[in-house]
Amino acid sequence: MIYNTAYKIKVDNATDEKRLLYNIEEGAFVTTASGVWTVYNNEWRKIYPQAGESTGLGWARYEDTEYTSSNKFNLTDGVEYTIPNNSGVTVKSYPSINFYNPTTKKILSTTQNDVYVMTVIFKCSVSNAEQGHLDLHLEGGNGTPYDRIRAERNFTKGNDVDHDFHQVFQFYSDSSVITYGLDWKVTSTGSDGKIWDIIYFIQKTQSYA
Image (tube, rainbow, N blue to C red; front, side):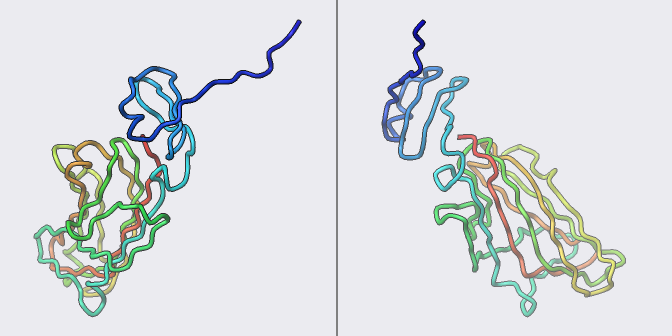
């Protein structure tokens, strides 16, 4: 008996732009500059590489340089603010990563169903620690209840005493995030407050494309 020990398949080689013009055929394979693609469940899926700059996976750190210990951002009791971050210092795993726009203060995504882990860091204080606390929530664009991603900070050390805020959040991007972006809202409730030394660390952990 003779066994065939080698099977060869000719894979089409195209640009990423041309791949998007192909008819969707289940099981099709195409290689482009960004990787190897196949059609699964009527959608293009990248099967190689699963890491590196071409996947869009990676991380970025955005540090605000405007509001520091010598120039704190004031929060009036009961007023909601968008957390400021001018991205004065930025460090990225890859130069092409763009997860945040410091002009609009929006968190960005370009692909639906991508998954992100985000760390929010800042220092904070309130003038009345007995009554005051900070409410923090994520705000989305058009109907998706991203405001359920939230946190609180109480002040146990006393009035006008510095406290640290450091919390990790996880979320996915839907079509409204791609269109409108996301932003962080903060409210000092029960007392005037201050925040400063603000840092965002954003990591894309899963790319749907």
